[in-house]
Image 1: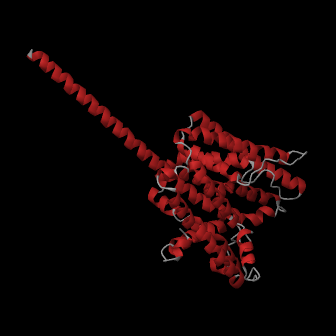
Image 2: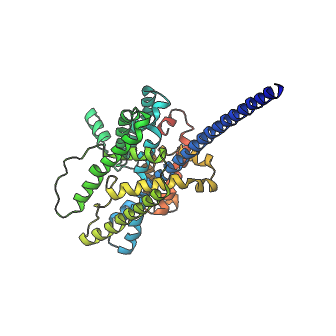
Image 3: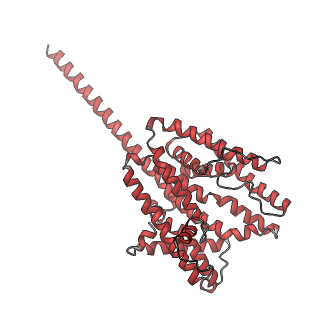
Length: 378
């Protein structure tokens, strides 16, 4: 009888140990997953940094890209244009990767409050500053009659800097996000995949085929908010793992689309003696595929960057990226007026663009330390 009791006690203890081990294993997996998720989001900071850098490089490359009289030099400028076209798309991809689950963290009022402070307030502020800067300092714009109609025209028609158009894209995107975020979690993969594929075909592929074909006709299904395609793909890339073979396929088609942009733009530009935009544009099929494949590549390989540069440094720089978006054109105008202040470095070059980018990040860091002004560079 005593032996039976001891045996039962041993079984009971063994069972408890087994349950304990299972619980600890489960806890370990949960913690590991949390750390992995947090680590994955570190790449967003890096993407934002190179997004801001790309936008500045494109704007300092534009004059050279549109001047195609010297064919050999233009090939280099064409490469810069095609490679760094991901600037604005990357920013929208980050919105999709980080905000389509916002409702799991905070409510709708908090969401709009954050977006208001993050984008709308700085956009209004920089429009006002840019107007007085261009009229009275660099004197590149005539003084407008100060009434509500002219103010709205300046604001909505991007008469100050064309870059502000990008922020209208971001604001439209932010307005749509809540409609998408409240999709049930277990249905998001299916619904977002459907939306992405539908938009890719109807807003990117078909219009692109029509545009490059000799017999054109009007495509009646264009929508003004076509940029939301990047929201869906940003979320899908962030939240779902692709097999190795699928990733290789995406990278290869991304390289192919980059070559279509690069070679196609070269051929058409020198054939028609006019800068061609048929193969490039944020919603053109080659650009959409190239930007998404590069975004996925960075997400999967960002650990290599973190081996060289500390994550904390990247995250700190990532928090400064809105500033360079707003600041770089006023800075370009300033050094265009006073080139001797940067030892006559040509600002409309890759080196010049890199220098402008560094200056903008430094200025943003300083402005964030100043009360009230810090709200212009959140």
